[in-house]
Length: 316
Ligand code: NDP
Ligand code: OXD
Image (cartoon, rainbow, N blue to C red):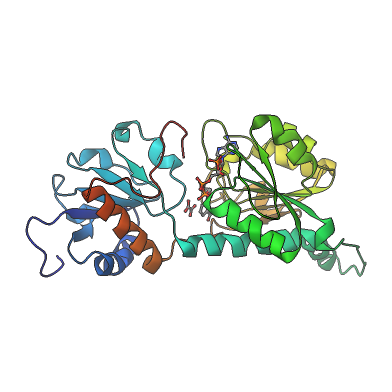
């Protein structure tokens, strides 16, 4: 137990299935909230936790009757909202400058990789083939970012700063300097028609599940690339393979998958036009992430609306 905590102090439980991972959050969270009792969930009796910080496919939170809210250590909360036993609890999604910056770095990396046709050069290298290929300069490459939220907006801005011709697509209208913005389902087709590289940074909701499908790929310019850094549930995997094989798409970078870890016999592992990474596009940083959790818990205790409070009706 952490020292010098008042016996009646609110109790925060760390709910992460991997024990080593849960333990690694103890020190930064205790530093950020010295007046709370903070323990790993499984070390607490069911009646103890007032709040939980959660990550991954944690189950069993419904067995803690005094829980008042869940703060997610990740930005995506689709798995928490999907738990029918937790619908009574407010959920707060992570907003961490480290997570945002990390995602922007990763999107820049993947966008440049497709822009400069690296999957093609890697395939040539495997065959010891010396062949020049042309790439336009960034201002002549159109990138479309699906989702202009905390992560999409920052990635879009930095892609534009590199010189790409960037557009963003979202539900509500946004104004972002230097970026063309498209709003709502009716503007999806014109947005896609001008996206040589498409980045998915949407939350996974009933509306966005399966959105990266054959119909969407057919609306992109021929030879476009797709970068999915959001959730595996956005992608119809079989449709991607068909679009890559027909040449409608020239490449894809996938960081998230319907099944994680990606099974060893999955065809994506060896597909020459697919770059696979193991859900590492960005991670919450423990120091800055703990500060966000601390502010959220302080707001909840004070009866204020915390930043990042999820709207269950919208699904994000
Ligand atoms: P936000 O909630 O801040 O932003 C979501 C954006 O998507 C908003 O712009 C929203 O529109 C838009 N959107 C939602 N539904 C629709 C729709 N039906 N049609 C059009 N636009 C829609 O999320 P974040 O930017 O913080 O994160 C996005 C996702 O990235 C997370 O949900 C998570 O799944 C994923 N992620 C992946 C990581 C990885 O390592 N691979 C790391 C972190 C996050 P509006 O602005 O109008 O509300
Ligand atoms: C997140 C993630 O949602 O890491 O934060 O996927």
